[in-house]
Image (cartoon, rainbow, N blue to C red; front, side, top):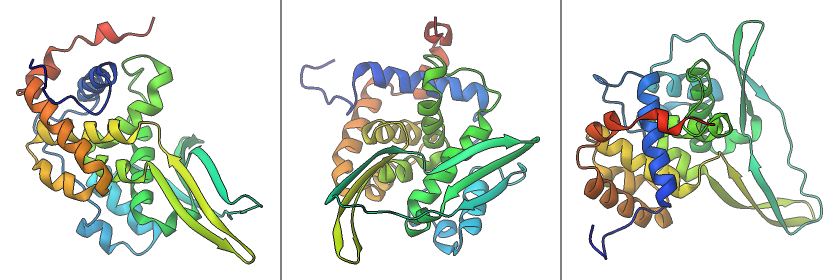
Length: 252
């Protein structure tokens, strides 16, 4: 490896975990004959959705989970600005997945309707909880299940949407109060999601430039770094994934 070779935008440990997670996900989802679609913000099915249920239906279809029985519920909520000029909401769960009396239920925040792309990413994440419900522990053990669920959404083509919605910074106003609020969603960092998207594009032969163009501008250089690192180190990504011994990642 050259001294000045492009490095991925994540640490070596995180890069190796993403590879292991992709290898693990292949034991859950048989993608040998599946060329999963790269889902970008301007995808026609997402753009056509006018309501939360319609958007949910579009995401389910793209994930090939339309026939998985599931109930969708919207939760009413209201933003209370308080008296802070800048509100840091921290890592937030924008949706939930549960099984109640044998029925799968996904709930989402009504405020998410203001940001359809982030809502689509939320639906993809929660549906991946459904997908992984009986998959066992991911590489690194049960504490990384939420991170693996984010990775699963990228593995199924939604990495761009997840990366774009991982951090939000927006202005709010409420009568006499106004200011800015920052929030984070999901569990993997923006850079990890971008790297997972680069792995996805390499694995399925997608044009990484299209994924790059769909990302927020400040994430595009990270995408270029990830693409170069993946191509340099794992030219035959399929073979790399098949060579990973998941026993090395068992939690002890």
